[in-house]
Image 1 (cartoon, rainbow, N blue to C red):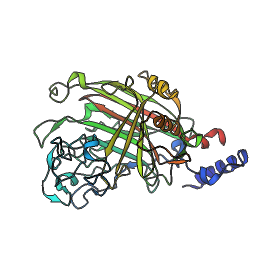
Image 2 (image 1 turned 180 degrees about the horizontal axis):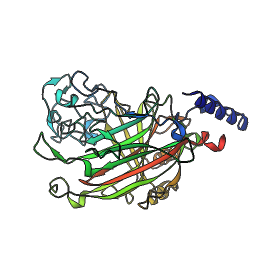
Image 3 (image 1 turned 90 degrees about the horizontal axis):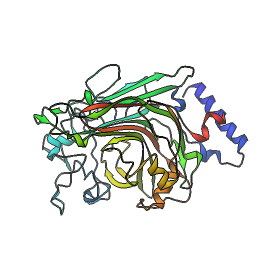
Image 4 (image 1 turned 120 degrees about the vertical axis):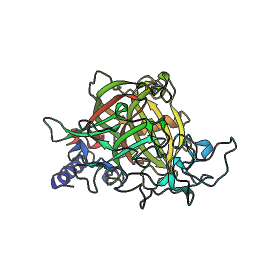
Length: 415
């Protein structure tokens, strides 16, 4: 942290102490370290070299589920990926089969390593990405292409393909840029998913393969952010409210390239974008998705809020060991279900200001009966917040930009 950043932090704390002398400042001192994206350092969440021979991913299967994953494989849409050596489930499916893994030994070497195979833990490359020389403080990037546990990808789960600038025209679906914001020292981040720049033909299988690329960037406790980004309450609180400005920056409708119909039915394309927050209580991690845009098969605005179970047994990752996943959509669904009104991204590329109280949405999930465990009555740490885009199809692009991210209690109005 620079001297200027330390002074800014101290000024926030002192101002709040004057305005609200009865508040417990030590309980409030959680925030996004790089608020306003002043430093804007970012890197892929996996360290350099992880995922290749000699530095295999740490697939750790020691959780409470019967297969060693967080959740029983039969209850999770992910199955228990990477898990070898167990009989099939009662429905006849392998325990590893799910959205994250579709082939035995992940389509690679079937040589057994502990509870898994070499094919699931060692990949051709580890396409580490970094911008602005990140050290211990950085924004964490996840670049996953499901099935992420698969040798059709160059890299391991969470780092499936290289990440490149949108101006580099590199043949990769994952685009990321840090851009200046005129008139302010803060910057903005641009995140884009380009199906046009992904090769859906897999040389290992000699055919086109279906996949769902996903790209996110965010502030995460102990992974670039020195603590939680906020403190949520199921009754709502500014300490758990994240503010930012955002909107789409590029848009081409998702569709199918000629010749890819075997993995891309015209009725099965779409894209969505928004942000997700992470919190845990009762020993269970929770991830809350809020869609701010959706189209095609990934427009869930007509659905009701949902809950699902997801395993991610990669100990190298901040997403380990998985989570109970909650899904909400801004607009009609969130307003009707929770009484929370949030604007949506629009294809006119307009930027909007957002204030998202994640505690209030978690609280709504509890009232709707979606949580496997009730939230505590007291405060809960908001471990991270991440902006994302995910798409299905072999052509098209969706990009967005966000700027001025901060926890409301530390917003500029308090300075």
